[in-house]
Length: 252
Image 1 (cartoon, rainbow, N blue to C red):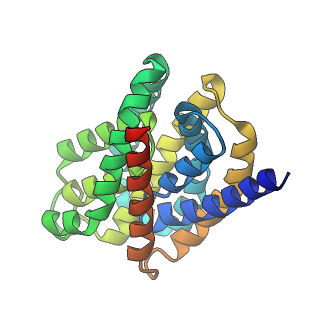
Image 2: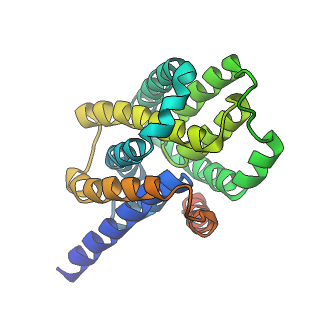
């Protein structure tokens, strides 16, 4: 009984933190994934459960940043379509490929996510500051969001980090508006994975019901403070945890 209550408490706390981190820095799902593994789930079940549980957290983030999202009208349709179609394809790949493929690939994906998060600010500096007067690189933007969404449908960890890197590269606007678009695209991709996985994937619904309220609350709070709260400490905490999980799964 103590173990069950302890696992419940851990999921509540981790769910709130993941929702907030997704809104502030991205990569919050990498906290939930190892927590689900620790409850005894297989990697596949933990992945689909994590994807379903993380989705509502983007509602809070997108809602709290809705004013900034209004400045993205010219790129909203193309990126939304790319996010939805790419997410569908990623979900299909996850469900049709053998579980052994996922078990082999996921440590590398987690490691990639950890590297991207660790060097997120460096990547932003390489890409330069957005120029609100310059035109978007539409082909790069659409293709990048599509490919990132395939990754997100297959394994959602740090999808938001990849989104923001692509947006900074290809969409010329303020970081505040790009962060709002990142939250919207995360919501769209998560909506797809929620529907697909809820219908045909081995989701642990007890864990989902525990995580959803806290990820929503965390996403709303994180979205409100995204422009005020320093994300460095949170980001590197996620990096350390993700790297540890990747190493553990490589040697397991």
